[in-house]
Length: 426
Image 1 (cartoon, helix red, strand yellow):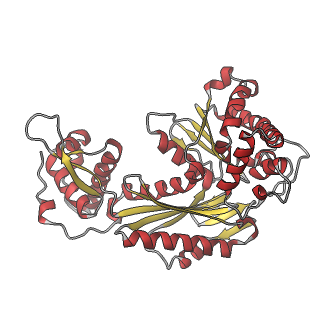
Image 2: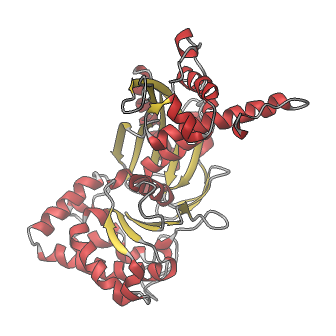
Image 3: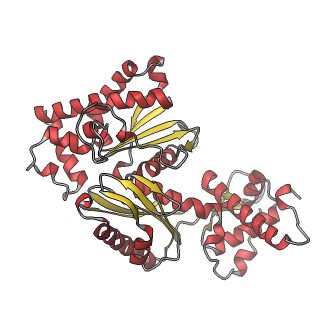
C-alpha cells in the first residue's frame, strides 16, 4: 500500500476518505492531461497509486464523462493494456471577453480543444454596462445551447475585462476605456444567463491572455514571460517562474498606465501621458488615418480593420508606415522599462501588436538592448502571439477548466456500467 492509498478510520474518517478520493481523482485526471493517453498500469506506476485504486478511479472518471477508453497500448511486455485518455465529448469550459470594440465567447473541451467560438463587433465603450452584458449573455446562451444540443455541458465560465477587477466580488473596480467604475457585473450577467448552475468568475483580460500564452508554450518552454496585449488599451501579463504575478490586491499588470510622456495626452483614466495614449490602437489609427476612415470605426470588426492596415503597410503606404514606426518607438520605450524591472525570458506581443508584428517585432528587438541596462537586453527575446484576439477567452476557458481538474466531482456521475466497473488492470 502506498501513502496515497492510506486507509482512514475513526471520527471524521468518512470526510477524510472523500477528500483523499477527490485528490486521487484529480491526480489521475491531471496526469492524463499532462502525459496523454496510457494504460491503467502506466498510470499506477507513474502516479504511485496502486493498480486497484487506479482501476476504481478510472471507472468513476469514465462515469463522469471525463475519461474514455482508447486503443490498446503497444510496446510493452506481455498483453497490451487498454489505453485511457481524456474524453472531450461531454464537458466544456467557457471563456468570455468584454473589450472596447467587441465581445467574444469561446468553449474549450477537457482535452484543451476549441469546441466553438464567437466574436461580435460592439462599440462597448459608448454603450454602458447593461446593453453590453445583454449582448454578451446572448452570445453565451446561443453558444451553450448549441453545445448542449451536441451533448456537451458547460462546467464553468470566466469573463475577461480590460481593467482592475475584484474577482472575489465579481466587480469591475475600474475599466477606464469602458467607462465602468465599481460595476458589479456577475450578478447581472447571472440573471441574463438564467442563473447557471456552473460557477461564473471575473478576471483581468491580460492576466487570462498570459495564462493562455503560457499554456500554448507548454511546461518546457519559457516560464518567465511578459505578455503585452495591444488594443485600445494596453495590458500586461507577467509570469515569473511559471506563476502569474497578480500583486497584493490582484491589480498587477496595468502597464498601459505607466507615464511615459509628461504633459502628454489625457488618458481615459484621467491622467496625462500614459503609455496607452501613444501605443494603444486608437493612437496608431489616429496617426494612420483620417477620422472618417473605416479603419477608425469601432463598430466594425477589429480584425477586419487591422487587415486593412496591414494591407496598406504591405503596399508601402507612407502614412501607415510612419504611424507604425512612431508606435514602435513608443513601444520600445515602455517595453524597455518593463524588461528592466522583470527580466523576462520572452516578451510576447499580443493583440494588435501581433497583427502588426512584421513591422514592430524586429525594430523592437533591435531597440531593446539600448533601452535595457542588462547586457543583450537581459537575454530577453521578442515573439509574436499566435492566439490573436482569442488569447483572453482561451485563458478564461483554461481557468474555468482548472477547477474541474482540481476536483472532478464537480460534474455529476452517470450510472456506472458493469463494463466500467470491471475495467481490467493491464
